Length: 329
Image: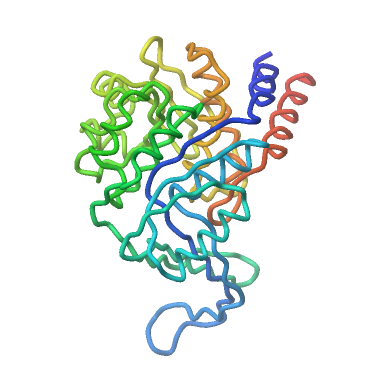
């Protein structure tokens, strides 16, 4: 029965208006073959075969929303540099029908992952980050608030690179009840920033850090009280645990996947959750169903090396196949 509910929610994913605000990045993947150890140092020598660029951070969240919602209007606000990486990011977003509005920062934050293949096995060898973390202030707050008013849901994608500030969050105050936050405890102001938002999706390590506790149940309980927010703690391979403001905590298990690469899974989960909640009545059942859908969507992402934005069709097929399995049991 519950799979039928999920299908029903999925059918309401279309034509949504979702606003994403946060730290946008460009992810670069450099793929190659590893045949030997470098003669200069005890490190793998990678012969580059191809390079590709994908949206990262808040831009990856926006791409996930666009892929999961047909005819959606996705609005993305953030900061990029006037440079090659910023232009590359804009190109990809335009090709994926994402309405972006970027203000200028010194450089574009870029993460390069070097992935080597030896004897058929792909392995993540090293990641090189070019961070731009200065404090940023949106000059176009009026534009953001205009979209915020009409949006079904607002996603705050905080990677602690300076875009999420108290200035921004206090301007968004009237819309707290439709805000979903992917938090970053390294944003030193996080205690004030996220108060009273509707929903938060910290990872296990983020939840423990934010709550200064050493077990998940304690962390979830105290974050829910402190922030007056529904808390969903993502637990990687072990699934998720929901701590609703009104109701008992609920554990959501994953379907084990053969391969598991966590890059971008949180971005996929929050995109799917925002879409699920934008078609719901905010009841406890809706929160649980949204978490289940987020969990299933992230389960598609983790099968891919690097970030991956699943399509609506892929998520639909996954839910249908689970429904068929249940029916046949």
